[in-house]
Length: 122
Length: 185
Image 1 (tube, helix red, strand yellow):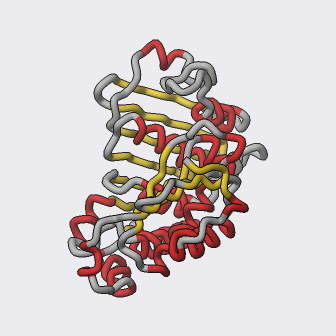
Image 2 (spheres, each protein chain N blue to C red):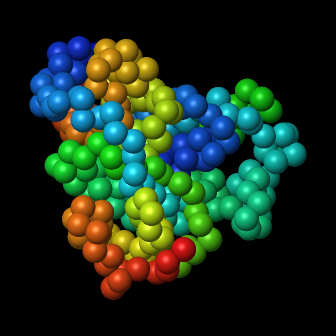
């Protein structure tokens, strides 16, 4: 039976060996990928996969990713909301994996809001 | 939805919205028997019998933001157009089980698609929720239980994106291995 063996887990562990002490800081950036039926049909899973890759590469422990439901703006899905502590949440619209990578690198990591992709300030 | 794995993602998100904290996902590809079965079970709050009667009617929904719900209706349509079925069992307080069957080689059956991405997306997007994922291809099994992983990797919780990324890759290659087998091993 093909099962994820302990060895596989150890390999994953080795690949991701990092200082765990970094993880003590609280999350002060929250990225919400809206995953209702509408979002999923429009490609939210690709957006999430790209985000996962970027997150894995960036290795920042203060960023939290969550999936949420439809927020009622199905026509602009996939939507992603970025909440940086002490600034207004920004909702991005019509996201895809490339836009997600750009928003992650510029907005999340550098603090530059990508107004071209933004739907609204909340 | 272009892939059945996207339906899986959608139905599992429903289960989580319904308050489930442990979700069972089962995919059984019996290519020789021309059968594909997908089962998703949650331990959420369940639904009353009245809702179940018309479960695939898009105007029956438990949501309160709007009067239509498309998730299960779309899955029912995807199953029925390839001689399949959709069955939903639910018990208030205990949870809900959704079972969809498909004729594997039916020309209208959507591809299963990237199940690894679905599972990875679920894990990264829903910290604190456990997933049990069993995938069988022609009698050979792949099995993953996030509760076991959490136990095994104490110091490196499943909230680390790098861990989830590698986990997703390893699911993907395991599934490829299962699918490419000719059933002799």
